[in-house]
Amino acid sequence: MMGRHTAAQPFNPRLLLVFIATAVSVVAFIFFYRQGSTLGYKDTFSHLEIGRRIVVGQATGLGQLGGIWLPLQHILMIPLVWSSTLYYTGLAGSLISMGAYVICVVAVFGIVRMLTRSHWGAWTGAAVFGLNPEILYLQSTPMGEMLMYALLLLAVLCLIAWAQTDQYRYLLLGAVSTLAMSLVRYEGWVMTIVLLGVVFYACARNGYRFFRGDQKGQGLLLAFSYIALLGIIGWMLWNYLIFDDPLNWLRGQYSSREQMIGISPIQTGDLPLSIKTYALGLRYTLTIPVLLLSAIGLVFLTAREKGSVQSVAVLSLLVPGLFLVYGLYSNSQPMFLPEFNGELYNIRFSLVALLPCSVACGYLVGILPRRYLLRQIVGTLGIAAVATYSLFVFVSDPTNMILGNREAHNSIEAQEGQQLASEWIDRNTTGRVLIESFENERAVFDIQSRVVYEGSPDWEAALEDPTSNNISVIVMRTDSHGTDRVSSSLSGSPALDGWTKVYDTQPYEIYEREGSL
Image (cartoon, rainbow, N blue to C red; front, side):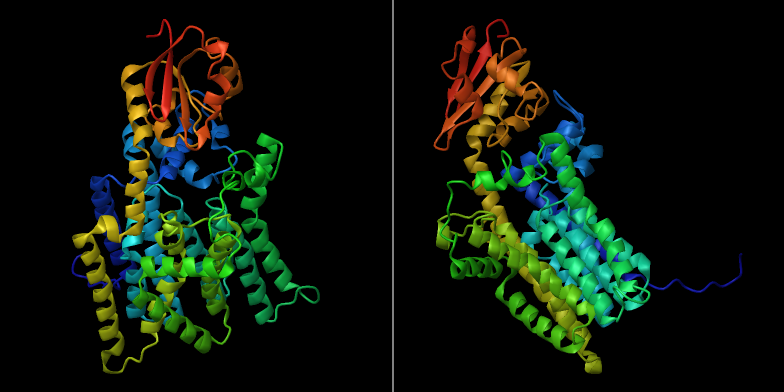
């Protein structure tokens, strides 16, 4: 009512943080998009193509999710990827990463705030994560890591809130976040088990009974498990129903294990070298000052919290890094550095360590004494230092200093032959195109809606008799990696009678059916 004074609403720093993070995210995307590197990794094409096949293509439907890549990211693309503009620009996938980036920044802020009750510590942690140049590149791409980071941080935030308030809703929200995380990347499966361990530890530390009395611990653990494990169980069931093998994701065609057959980096079986590779990757992507301050922050967190549930939840964020070291050692998750392998590959894997490091840096500021405005001064200097470093990288040489961006540019050069073939087919042909998608992701990208590929119902029939299966264009690849399935099935075959070679530029030969020219 007019003339009546109302109490002023308290300032909500999270709203300001969301605004800043969103603005930074958009500016970073525009920057890298103008550089042409947002679709640098070849896997970006795979993600976009899987999402688009569900709604646009020769055989649409959820079956196009396949059984190797986990499905959540591609399902989230469905409302976006039908748009040719969003698909070809990559925004259909990048928008998901950008939204996840904002969630990550806010979640780091929330975790540090709950641990320290300090806004300055929370802002510092958010800045360490959100202004990292490698993260700003990764969030501009349609890759799945940023979505996994967001869901993992949300799960940890919810478990900390549950530990502090004993409100069951936070436990259930943490379970839902864990479920979603397990449907993004397989590292999420490891973290699902780890977070189950955190819940078990919380129940045991609080003295909740598991097998006698009210059995409260058993009930809480089962409630979390029922939800959190649904993703893993559901994906195995999906693989069983579609491929008759619940472990198809592990040992099926095109699985990571199959792709690594015959490839043995020098890290394989060498634990010290695997650790050294990971450590050097951290130095490049997180920088030495952040690593040192993070180590100090984690020491203080461990000492001050004395085994509290919230400290164990934060320390669980270290596990993905240990899993990466195992991946390097076992050759299941390769990351190459020029010093050891002569090339740069999958450097983004090391960025998972920024999750605990950003929280640790924020914690270190948040526990400083309030006397003499020490938190404010150190927090301001820390945020300014992070922002200055990031600005320096972007202004000086972002193509080389941001290693993910450099790797993307190298990948773009390596895919030039695929891009040229794809553009030629798009300009000069019509009708259905027979091409294997695996290792030809960029070649498929521009013509995806016309493609008959290894996930199409008539794939095998088209390989035997492309003419009878209404194929107009055949694309064969032969290069240093060997022949693809189309080439090995049809090269020199009588099934090519009546077909004309219309393109012969390494690594592709393209044939067109006579009468469709």
